[in-house]
Length: 329
Image (cartoon, rainbow, N blue to C red):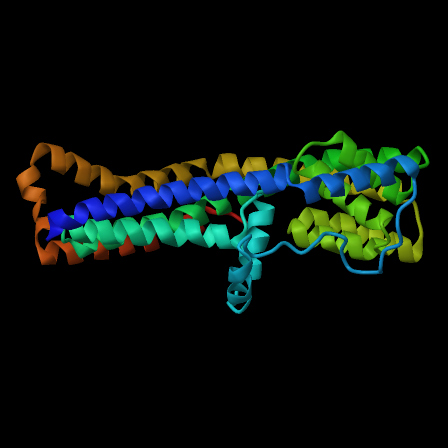
C-alpha cells in the first residue's frame, strides 16, 4: 500500500512545485509588466514633470492597501481571520514582496505535503511532525530575520539621515524638501521610507500623519525621538536643524554604548551558542560512532516520544538562553 502511494506523492509534490513557479511568474508579471502598472507609472511621471496633480481626498495614507492575496476569491476568507495585519506588517518591514496569502501557502502547503509523504513512506509520525513543523516555521524565521536585519540597518544609518536633514534645513529647505533630499541620497531602508513620507506630504497628507505612518512602518525608538522632536518644534517653534543634529549625536553615542555592550557580552553569547549546539552535535557523533545504540530513538515508540520531548525542551532552552544574553539598556 505504501509503495503504491509513493508515485502519487511524487506527482503531488511535482504539481505543487509547478503551481508555485507559475504563481511566482504571474506575480512578477503583474508587478513589472501589467498594463495597469505601466499606466500608473506613466501617470506619476506626467505629474512629476508637469508639477501638477489631480486633487486627492484627505486620507491617512496615499498608499493603496495591499490585498491579502492575488487570488480574488481567497481575500474574503482571509479578511475574516485575525492577526493577518501583523503578518502583512512583518512582510513590509522585511521588504518581502509576498502577499499574506502566499506567505501562508509557503508555511502550510509544503509542511502538509511533507507530513503526508513521510507518514506514508516511513510510517513514523514523530519524524513527520518534526520535519513538517520545521517547514512551517521556516518562512516565519526568514521573514523575522530579514525584518531584524533591515531594522538594524535603518537604526545604524539614521544618525547620518538626521545629519542630512539638518544640513538641508540649514540650506533653506522645508521639512518636506528635506525628507525628499534624504529619500534621494540614501538607499534602502532609509531612502524609500523617507521618500514615502515626502510623497504622502506632497499629495496632501498632513505632515504629522505622514510622520506617524513612518513610525508605523519602522518601529524604531530612535526614529520616534526624531518624530517627536519634529512635532514638538511644529507646535512650539525653535531651531529644528540644531535639535536634529543633537539627536543624531545622541544616537551615535547610544550606538557606541551598544557596541561596547556587545563586546562585553560576547563570552556569554558564545557559551549560549555552544550549549545550544552541543545536544545535536552529540547525537550526530553517537550516530556515526555507534549507530545501533542510537537507533532506538527513531525505531521505537518510546524513542519517538523522547525525540519529540527533547526537541520541545531544546526549543524552550534556546529561547530562554537567547533572552538571557540579550542586554537591554
